[in-house]
Length: 458
Image (cartoon, rainbow, N blue to C red; front, side):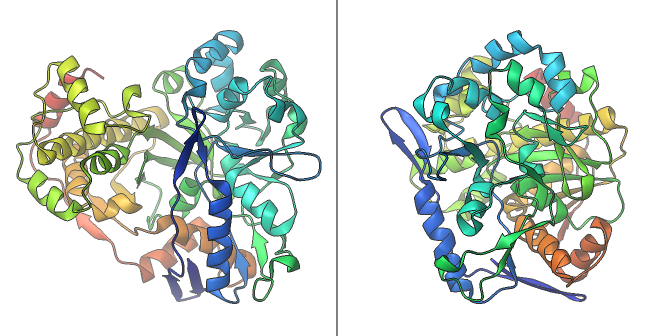
């Protein structure tokens, strides 16, 4: 994406798109990081001369470099099974209370700490000099500079969320070498110009942005004031509120809420929900790309016929999602969907229930009152899910922009370059002035949603 930003201007142009496909070899699921690097370079060449470049990606996964800076193998995918059972063993050793008090992080089986525990004793980890999270790895290839941007570092469960520093004592007690982790960077800091050898037009500067895509997406929420919740909705639904300080209470830990660092020292207080992964994998299993037709038919299906918990661990790995959803319905005594439209309605009703629960808990645990829910990311295009989320939460939903992550990325770059000024409120004001959103008003009574929630027992 190329962004054009000024005092009254904010627009994006897509210049290149490429696939991100996992590869399973010898029983391990990997990212094809070299194909991604080629796609990045092709995109930068297609973009032409630009002022700066900012890199964001998903969280928790990493590449290992040796002392010469060479990559030690393709990064392992967070959906790989190598972490099965690791979180429980390490939590017993370190204590869940200590883990949460230090990192404030939601307990997810693929957090970086558990990936590294699973990799202990492997030759790659033993000889590694640096561990770079995915956006930091791409930035290293562009500039030759190692570093770790804080919004993504905060997802590792190896970062002290109060001190905004690496949790080195926790690393040592987990059997992880602290010297693997490079110096931290703040969003908006300048990294270095692009290496001349890459031959990119204009040799732009690389700027640290909110390199966790959700951190950039939250910058890209066109909210007014502080009484809003956000749902960054794509493969995952990241549901939460923006705070000034982490919430590290026992109730927050039990609710499995996470405190991730955001841009300008903010805290993204949120819960990961499995998200549209369930729909994406179902469509892959059916071999269909006609999502609009599926959604149209799903809208005609009876509400709440079948609901499941989207966070069931059975849904995490790739595979035959419709079969897994059917099995989950059988286990819960729910009617089993018999058509693709019925399965889609089950997924969307269940996601809306999960959004409802997370928004309610975020308010209760943080004390932050929510008046509006902003849905950004690809899920903002899904009118049925947006309306169901408004109905479930009993709150207005403002959907858009779809490309909130890219907007948040370029806004931080533009501020560093001096093209815009101000705090997050000022950046969001520019979004509201230049981007369109769709408003969904809540419909119907809350009693039906409460009854569906009670059926799940979560």
